[in-house]
Length: 277
Image (cartoon, rainbow, N blue to C red; front, top):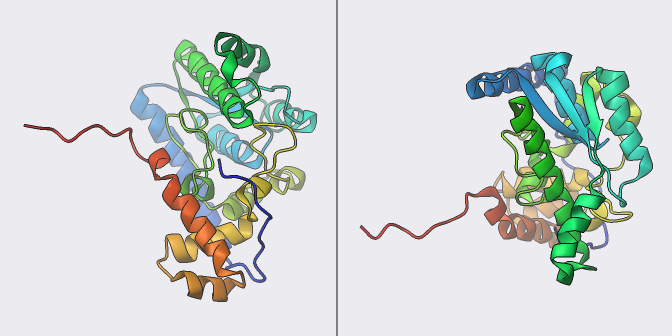
């Protein structure tokens, strides 16, 4: 995760808004993808970790459309740093909005057991935050193995490109259904499929430690991040032209470029040496 910096905001972020036809096309494309992934694995059910955030909320909605509510199982995995409102939202998504089976499993005792075994990491905020996320991944796969299911990831395009996820944590899944959507488009599609506004527009947080928010840690707001990624990182527009187009300092564009380049290892398979023979 990147060190928190003052949040940079564009005067006029690039408009990445999807049309109604595009939103419906993405809806069909993603639900077909989820069904295909389950079929390819020879299973009928999917596991998803529910955080109360928009990414897991949208993904779970689309999973239910693809597989049916009876074939989607949610895990709500709070720790001592999670906001109570987010955990309540996670349960609300499962029980009220989707009517799927779910369980609540406390992560802190599991993380504490690891820290008992390796106490040197006590007090290391980043290491312990990543530990909590990796504990959730282990629980997802424990449930998936037991239930003969696939694990659905909730990673979006914006966060993948800047490495805003935990390696072998929330990045450890069988597939990422919303991987092609920038964060703003995730919110758009969520509203399109009927996610209530209070969930679609809530402040994003990985909740790896107390009072964490995504934008504060990334040092940039999501609309600006999406614009820089679309124009500069993926679109090939120069840093200076991108900065001028969306009304930010060129330093903000370079900051995003640094996040992208520095997180390449997270988006690649673990390397091995080239073959000798």
